[in-house]
Each structure stands twice: as structure tokens, then as C-alpha cells.
Image (cartoon, rainbow, N blue to C red; front, side):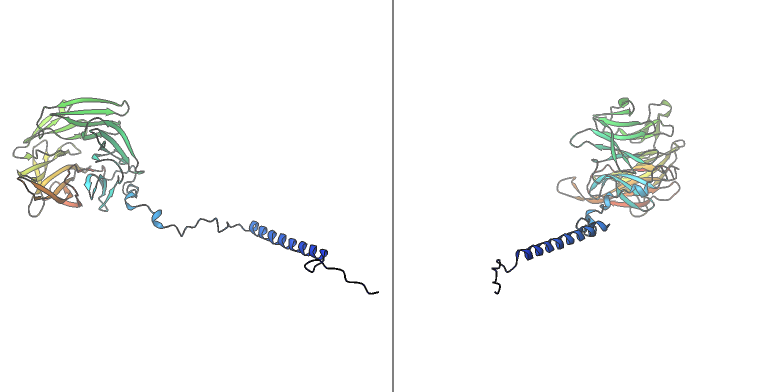
Length: 388
């Protein structure tokens, strides 16, 4: 008898055959997964999906702006006093700030691009690794005495005083500061030791007229306090040390009655650099020159500029000596004005702040740099780095 055909399951496959196919497929899947895992473990490189791309980062997001590059890392090495730089304050190119002018490269750097308000009275530290300065407390009459570290460019506040400080002198080795303030017709000289934190007003000058007060503040080579008081044709050197007090007759020379940073004592204490009026004082300034005065003999040497006119018209101020006494740097405020409506009305239309050098024996002063002055404010000052 012929065998009869058995009915087939749906799909045309026997149960045994279906199970075999499923087992084979599972083996293949296991082998593939195992191969992938072994490949990952045997490769030392990170997966490309987690690597941080470096070429796709825009350079501008990581590059520091030029104004924030610390100029002191190359121009003012720590603990090197070589006379190669000037500290300069005032409004230059829209920023009222503290600047560093490199005499070797003729470059100007803003040390406080986002910093203190209207810095003034720059003073170098004895090691040339910091600059002390005075700044205003916004919205008030108080003053801050601060310092900037020229290596890190960190700014620290040393103390606050509840009046406007007009001049500053520093004994940084002792942590002591001398400064002047003006109230009504009186000038006060105050000192503070950072160790004690106590203020002591030890000298009062006045009463005096607004143009007949303390014009500058300095320290003599012996560390004594020196003050300059303008009396037109006489210059008083006032000190809490009696042997240093004196009156210097200027004879036919006349001081600028509205100047605030007129004078500087030479490093040896023998010469005085002082701004002098050479002609009448007009509505927008006067004819001025820089005079070097020998305190022992009274001999003078007057410096003007070569050209037409042969004098500075306006204001020259803030003389500062090189450490060897061979030259004096000073500022010339070359502001320009135009007539406006109303009698005696003049409108500021621009100008420059210029750095000039005067050297004993030279026929004229020499301009070494010029910067844009964006506003009519004054208050520009310069301080020469010690050494060199």
C-alpha cells in the first residue's frame, strides 16, 4: 500500500526545520555582537562621537582682545627698574585710564580697560613691579588709593578716604602714604601707615585763595615731605621738617596760577622743574615754558619748543625726572577751541596730549609722543619709572 501524504503546517516548513533556522539566526546575531564588542575593546582610540573638535571652534571666541594682553609681561619685568617706561593717567582715545608708555618701543598700553574710575597721581613702587594711584568713588566725594600689580595686572584697594585726594606720595617700603586734600580755603596733609590703618593730619596750610594753594607734593631724597605753594612770583617749599622749609624767589618768572601739578624736585634735591608763564594768560591758556631752577644759586634754564610759535600755548604740567637727573619728561595739553555764542564763550573742538623731554643744556624741549585728547577735561599726569 502506498503511504498517504501527511498535512503540512502553515508556511510550508516542518516544526524541526523552523527551530533549526531560529537557532542559526541567533548564533549569527551573537557572533556579530561579539565581534563589535571585541573591536571596541581592542581599539585604544576614543570613539569619534565623543572627541572634542578643535578645528570648528571660532578663533575669536578664544583669542584675547588686544587691550587685555598684559603689557607688563614684556615691557615691565618684575623687580627690574630700568627707566624704560612712563606711567600716564588721563583721558586718551575715549578712555580715562592708567596707561603704560614704553620708551623703547613707543607703544601705549591701557592697564585698566575695565577698571578704576578716573585714576590720578601715579606713583611707581620702589621695585617697579607695581603702580600706586588715586581713583574716585563713583557717585561720591571719597577717594580710593589703589595699586596695580604689573605682572598679574590685579588691582587692589589699599584704603579709602572720605575726601578728594589731590596729590599722593608713597613710602612703599614702610607701607606709608602722604596725601593732600582741600577743604574751602585750607589744605591738609595727612599720612597713613597701612600697618596701623590710622589717618593722621599733621600739616595744615591756609587760609589761601583758590589759585594760591598747594600746587604739588613730592618727597626729598632724604624721605622728607616737600610741598609747593604757589604765590605767583614766590614758591614756598613747606615741610614738617624745619630745615627743609624755604621760599624760592622766582624774580621775573611767574607761575601759572591755575596749575595743579606744576613742579618736581630732582633726584639729588638740587633742581626744581616748574611750569612758568612767559606771557599773558588768556581765555584759553597762556604762553608757557618749562624752567629748571637751581635751588642753591637761583640760576634758571627755560625750555620751549622749536617752531612757530616758539612757546607752549595752554598748559604744561606734571614734570617727572629721570633717576639720573639728566632729563625731565612733562605733559603739554594742546587743546583746541573755537568761538561760540556769547561773550567769552569757547568750545572745545579737539586736541592732543603730548609727551616732551627737556635736558639741561639742550636748546629746546623735544616731543616724543602725541595722543588724542577726546574731551576738555584735565588731570593728565605722568611718572617716570625709576632706574636706568
